[in-house]
Length: 313
Image 1 (cartoon, helix red, strand yellow):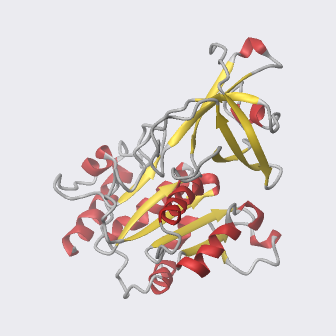
Image 2: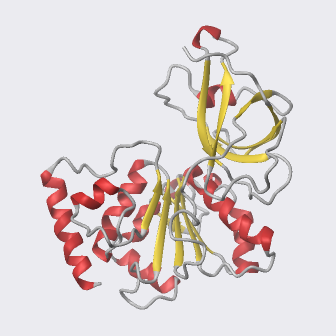
Image 3: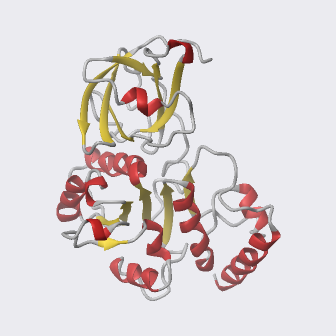
């Protein structure tokens, strides 16, 4: 049983977007002295004690930060209620019971290397395609917000956010991002996977990873003003945040374009030379590869595809 947490933060505000999606703004008792104290793309650990069943103790979970590091005030998190938790003491089931003014735990130290700085570097000139499923948009919202906090007139034309969800209401931050499309040239495309249940929806449909399949990739190239076949690591770098299916469903088709995953064991299994740079990055807390590299029936065809793609670069 996890030990009882000593609360050190207050839930300053809660915005319920749907029954299962909410924005939580958490105010630590003591903000880190160094400012900015995190980098867009990093996460913090939130925690709660189980007050109803104290015998279960406490639970902590890592959550991506949605606010910009330049912001003052509470730290923002975009969180989904987990309907079928694997844990006997699920964090979101405790979180959904609290309201503004209630106490909680937040580790006042950010962690993670899913950042532009720690991947390609802030001076990398390529188009940044951000692939998000559900609340996976949080680190990308932090990134574009940070750009605007430092320069309200920032040109975001090289930032592309592809956001997938089941329903239009699940596309959190859609109104804010639409303003950035109009005012700062952000490229934002929301897609819903259950369009039959949203007859008024006029945007893209299907899972977000479908953007990289066949004719859909050619269409994406046109939207990004790339020539036919131009969606390659020479022009584009890809960031993914979402469930394993979203990561795998993006990484695998991009192998044919020569995109190299930032995962050492996958690189080795696909025969990628050590000197070649990564070009697709993803946030994943699980240490297991998103591709079953132990199965030759899976790996060998992918390796052949990767080698063929690299030979064309």
